[in-house]
Length: 308
Image 1 (tube, rainbow, N blue to C red):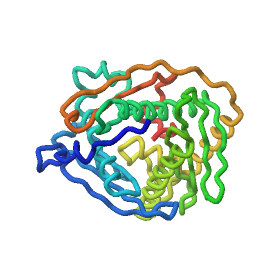
Image 2: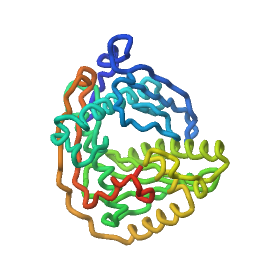
Image 3: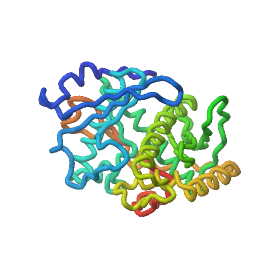
Image 4: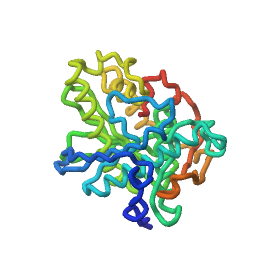
């Protein structure tokens, strides 16, 4: 069942000049690998809504929400939704209710989604898919989930589907060589494998763009770039896996997982609920989080863990 977005109505007063939380919205047209021009939107919350521990990024825009789509308005709505999701995270991850939302177990936005619908159906579905994606990537990297290569005719990229216990969605990883020779990756989940690959390609294009910009600006490839000068863990990991050492680790995991057969049972659900707050005036925010078999992925010093 397709959930109807009421963003044109619910987001009409979302900007600061109308008393809302969004300070500004930036939109840039950008060509993608399929030859079609997409709109890349970045939404920024009022600075007062960001916590003191907010880390500024070096590679990605320091926006609170981002969205990419062929349709300009849709890209903007996606970016605003993600910024509202971040607002809820910033507010509640250290709040009195942090345990109720499992932020005591994992203080990240994993499994969170925001959607301007009339009911919670659409946002809960989005949160479940996002939670399944992150859980599966972690367990795959830990060697607990099998995978299979997906034929990609007429493209320079490769694709892998992770075989997970989540029967209602597909989780994929796509990768392609950058102009400097290293690999970039994108991973995503969707109701179908084609939908998952489409979303993953958007992430892949974005990651290629920031890595190639880093190489142009510094003159250093990921193999020689001082990764620890990057403050944000996801950027350090992205850069490491674009290096020769990271590529070797990734390809080894692909080879091993394609020989694995056993699929674990569904994980235990740690939380599955709405996160209410002032953002609810604009969109419903939901979180679903599944229990991982290891918390190694939360170690910010582990640049060699494939999750970013």
